[in-house]
Amino acid sequence: MASTYTSNLGVEKIGAGEQAGAWGTTTNNNFDIIDRAINGVGAITLSGTSHTLTTSDGTLSEGGNKVLVLGGSPSGTNTITISPNDQDKMFFVHNSTSQTVTFTQGSGGNVNVPAGAKALIYADGAGSGAAVVDLLDSLTFGGTKLTATASELNLMDGGTSAGTTAVAAGDGIVTNDGGTMRQTTAATFSTYFNANLVSVPSAITSSSATLTPSSAQSIYQKVDTSSNNVALTLAIGSLAIGQYIIVDKTSSSNTLTLSYPSNSQGVSLGNSVSFAIAINQNGSIFTFVESVKF
Image (cartoon, rainbow, N blue to C red; front, side):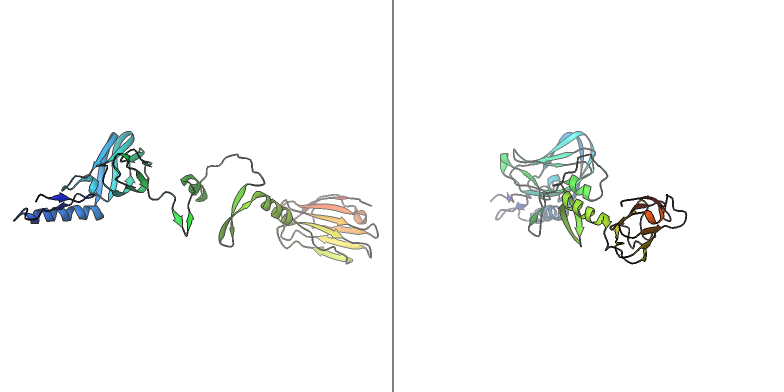
């Protein structure tokens, strides 16, 4: 009975009563084929635009390696045809050439491995309609299918490519919400920033007070003089340069007098002021404008 061969590796199955006294050579060759299929790393030198990756029965073949390291100098996109087309195959691929490599086995789908990239692929051995599939495409994590493109992932990883696409209220912005990554609309961010751009503390009513901002946040400060005169001193505090304090006298009764750090720049209206804007000029003094409401 003649030898037969396994479907995918071409391992020889010695027929009953065959190869008397010589079966050891065949068996050793089979072990080599299996060893290559499990851990073999094959260096393949590409040239031109095509290459045939063959697995032959009973032979240590190029297509029998588990890992394919592609080198050489192909003249353009190089198409590697996995042969024969009725063998199931799985390969780890490292394309170290300067060209894209396309793996094909039949008229089904192909897989492109860009220059310098790595891939895990399998060929389904379906004959003339055989397809090659990228096993890392559309991965699923915890039941969620990964649909991001490589370009999108690279952008999240710190890509520097930037466009000028206009931002709309419904656009999503990715944010870290206490350790959980979420996508929030630009409108939601706008609401937050508007609400936190300026703080509005309770109105000052005491006759003498100092306003020292405790955070880098502009302040809209109401001053109620309905019961008494108020002398208010403004300090830089934690304001960032360019942030400001707005002082608004809410009553026409009595007077409001403002004091600023020395060397601040502006024209003081003394106890006639009823509205003022003081801008942090350089971290130590204000530039201020005072006006009269009442």
